[in-house]
Figure 1 (cartoon, rainbow, N blue to C red):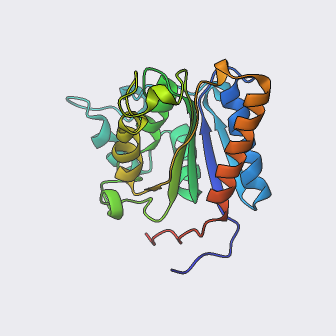
Figure 2: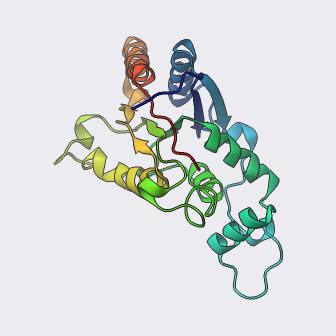
Length: 228
């Protein structure tokens, strides 16, 4: 498969309210590793930007009758009336070769602000549906995506048969229902288990492991996104 010679772009969407958290340190390490590997890295810090997570009626043109969010997204894309902030984030998403979602696992899922980013930016008519299909026919086919995660529980607790259950089970709805749904090839997640319970030496080693994992992602050949 042919590859592009242009510098690749990584979009990191980060969701942690504490700038001094391990989650933020992990994100920063990943961003620096990608940059050193030749990626042009863009970071969206949802808490720092004050991202509004609610997909609501007020960001669309007036609607007669019941409000159907995806139908209104489709109409807004076709009419060129998509909310300006959403449009800007959508453009950044469409320009990125690699999407990295960086977050702490809260209640076995995404933090609400990140789920709200998905709700508003994974626009029907922009990344799936309308002129686009689903999965391999969606707009982001040919791109890669990965999760950069921290947990409260230990690695052992997230093993099959562990106290909390298999990590793959908790990530399936994100991998399949969000990322693969809009066309991404999903890479193995990079996860630091229970950083709050690690010593400083162990945390430093965990960040080294993150850098090594992200460096492998950066070194892998990337496919040219599908035309159209």
